[in-house]
Image (cartoon, rainbow, N blue to C red; front, side):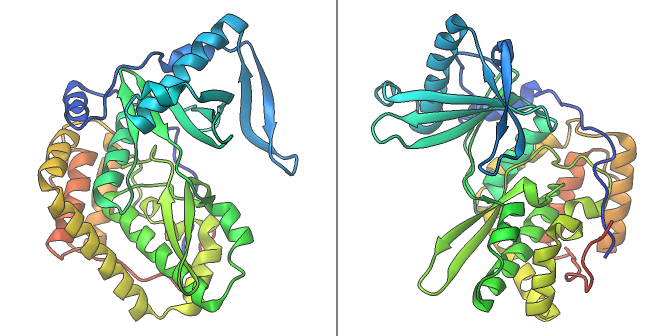
Length: 357
C-alpha cells in the first residue's frame, strides 16, 4: 500500500459567500454573536498546556487583562448557551469559563473554551475559529450524509463548533486495540465504514489525530463509531488517496487488524452497507443537500491544478469519464455522490500491506 505525505501546501481560508450565508441562515446555522474570533486575539500572555504525562499538547493557555477577561467570559458563556440551549439565559447563570486555550498548529488556529457547570462541576468545551467555507461545507456534509449530528454557529468571519466527544484515534490505537477478537472485528468494521464515508464525500486528511472513536457498551462487547473532528481538508487536495483513511500510515494498527480478521468479501459487504446508508440519508434530505451542492458547485475551494488532478484520479478509479467536465471541487463532490446513487461507485478492498511513507 502506498503511503501519503502531508498536504502539498497549507490550505488557504475560503470566504463564506452570500449564497452560502443565506443557506446557513435558512437552516438555523447563523446567529449574531456577542464577540468575534479576533476579540480573543487580545490575550497578553500564554502558557504551554501540558497533558497528564507532562507532554506538550501544542495548545497554549491564554490570559487576558482583568477588564477584557470579564467581558470575554460573559460573552463566552452566552455563546455556549446559544450553542447548547438556544440561548437560555437561565442556564447561562450557572456557567463559568475555566480556561481558554489557543492552538497555532493547523489551518484554523482555533480557540478552545472550557466551560464549567456550577450545578455539578461538570465541564464541556467548544471551539471558536475563523470561518472557512470549505470547513463549513464539510460540517454540513457530515450532518447530512453521516450518522452524526454536528452543532455549529456562523457569524460573519467567526465559526463556533461544539466539542465532539470521543477518544482521539491515535490514543485509541495505543490503549484500546488489545481487546477481544469480537471487539477487534467491530473496530475494523467501523474503520471500513468510516473510510467509505470519507471517500464518498471527499473528506481528506483523516489521520488518526483528526478523528475520535466513540465507544458504547453493548449487550455483548462494545460498539464503536469513528467521527471526524477536523473538516479543514474537505475537497481541497488533488490526490485521490488523500481521501481514503486507509492510506495513512498513522492508521496502520487498525488496517493490520482488519487484514487479520476480515476477508475481502466481508470488507466489500461493509462497504456496500455504508453506501446504502449514505444513499438513504441523501434521499431523506434531498432538497437540503441539493441546495447545498448547488452553492458548493459554484464556489472556489481549491486550485485548478488540484481539481484537474483529482478528476483524473477519480475517472481512472471509477473507470468512467463522468468527471471530465467538472470545473470545481463542488462539482467533483456532487458527481462522486451521484455515482454512488447510480450504483456506479467503485472501491477497492483494504490492501494486503499497511501504508508506509
